[in-house]
Image (cartoon, rainbow, N blue to C red):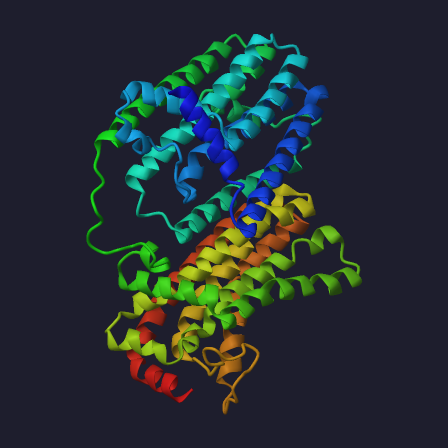
Length: 522
């Protein structure tokens, strides 16, 4: 049976390269990217042969822990179906225990596991070159690879049991945003460290903790042996216990999958609804889902978003021409981008055109409308700033300014959103209609549009002035003010956002008739 299942597995792997030209091209490109990443990771590990043991330990434990966590999250993020799902073998009447063992063993034969094995063997070779007894790297590689493989099987089974109807492309996109917010800043920070000289003590403490966790124990064991750590057996024990626990859980899940009958879905059908299937079933959730559709498909919204990086980049040129040091110029574009991100929804209601009648006729509360319209900007702005701020600080070269830049960007972004919540309900002005060119602007008989745009932008800068001042002091005089800029920026930004949403909701409810008249006349 094991040989037959293995043959089926290999046939499925080669069968993935069959199909129409577009499918084959995507598969081949993905395979080439994976091969390139594997070669790059192995080469990077080989280059650590002359590095201190602490550096190699830090890199292998952090990278190994991240890969293990990735194998756990991939089944949740992706929508792929498991070709080795135990339910596919239910009609054959095979013994459950034997089937669980065969599927666990055959599951090792996969492209990601092969790539992981190549990287893990490279890490084991480095530890062997650094003086570790060959048994320690061998045991560490085997435990690490088997843990990742079995963890993927367990998470895939759990996903098929509990998230079968809840996964969607939109939900996967949210998971990807979360991963970007966490991984990219950490990666930029780690890349900025001067690894060849020494590893910060705080990072070594984090690595020692990870070495005793299920996701990092197997990768830490060879390094702790090479460092002659008397407690290396603890990592080995945790790694072995983790693999045993995963094996037991896998056996239970195989039994559950073979004996549980899937109930037909009842109630509201979530599949195919896009953002409406992901958002909560509340008025604010409905507005958020509709706004997300607009921001991702309407050309008028997309053009506004694309203007932000251009406007931020334009600020660099005159500063460089004027002779401002490049490390200072690197800090300038992000505050401008944060300001424009907060300013974007200042006329959001006008883009609805006559569709705004749905909100008014249904008696929707202003709070639901105001909150729902801010969701797309929050989902766009927070990941964008979380990724860009560490990158800008890395170009600047002084990581102590990270809190100050974070406070400035948070204040400008959140105060802009708060003032925009008031402006879009109080002073909407005519814009191009749905389907028209985003560059075509209707004639206006008053200057209310210019006043609304300027008021939001200037108001955000004025309210953020204290944060800007403390950040400037941190840059030029005393770095201790960087923390002050961070907390004051968060406090001012969140305060203005809450007040702006409350005021905007009251304005929306009291000016419902005028808003409907505005929508019909533009």
